[in-house]
Length: 211
Image 1 (cartoon, rainbow, N blue to C red):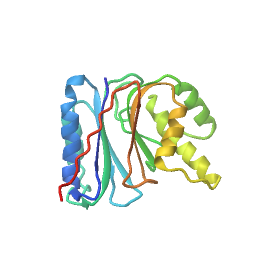
Image 2 (cartoon, one colour):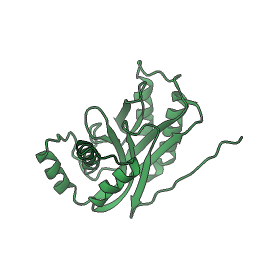
Image 3 (cartoon, one colour):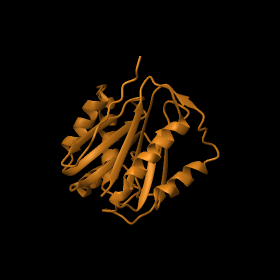
């Protein structure tokens, strides 16, 4: 069973080292579920940048993958930041970095998503999106969700319409069949994250800063 974990700090300054440590520790708490790979997504140095790191094997392998990134400034601080992480138990596609979560909408990582559950109509969604020019890089059902988010976003933008991040994800979920718990992140909606579920468990925890 897949495990998803997300962390958001809003107007509470944290450095990247703390954020990554929180994500990895969160994944470690989920290791009892069984999994074949792990990954995470964090903010880049620029507002329109998301960094994704994925690795086959245990969370320790992902930790080493991140630690080996010589150009990753872990001392960089963020007043607000959104991030997500995932442990994958394969349902679609063999264990590999490309099949691991988070999955992305495109090469620019405009939308990223982590998923627990199964999308039963992903083949139909994939066929429609491929006809519209979207190229898939994994064998998973989850990648169709990320690309669907970008398709709806681009379609609304072309019509000079503006959707909130929440309304956008509601539109995405209307097209999904199956069970899911999902976390969405997007460069178009900095410092925002959307969590949603249907049939799969999802726990939200709010920690307030003391004045």
